Image (cartoon, rainbow, N blue to C red; front, side, top):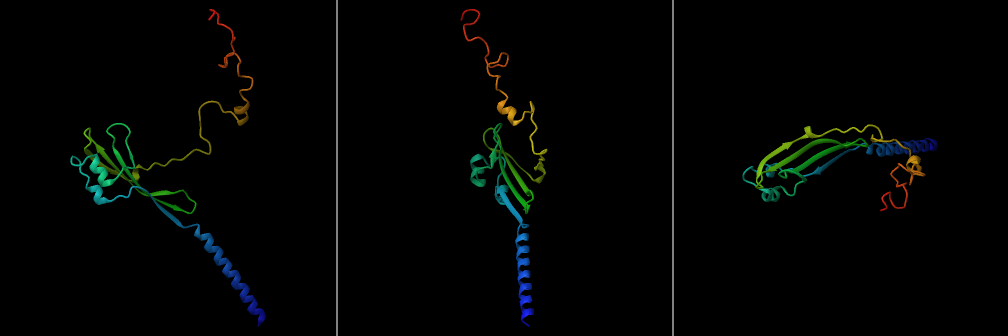
Length: 169
């Protein structure tokens, strides 16, 4: 009787350990949802009217823009993006709204437009190195490559006579 009770406890310990290990391993596979940027309030966005609102009223209604155009009329952009990520995978956009408020020369709203996920671009880097133009030199060539070149003629290091020039100056 004692031996079967001991086996039962050992089996329970193994089962408990296995369940605990499975719980720890699967907790890394949870979905992570994040929101970035502006919280879009449809009622407030719909209240912005071309020809009626200006920069001050737009800022009072929607707040400071996410970013603004540097050249031209200075359009304002409000960016909102929801992302989803599973465990260690790269995050992927689930939804996105880019609200563009255009102004005329007097600072009045001329146009309000929205775009969605169709403007998201996929960037895929090529390998682990960035291709560049020019010479391909190793670390040691970069460090020791100029030894002996300083002051050598034709290398742009000065290499000419240190006295006066040919016309005496």
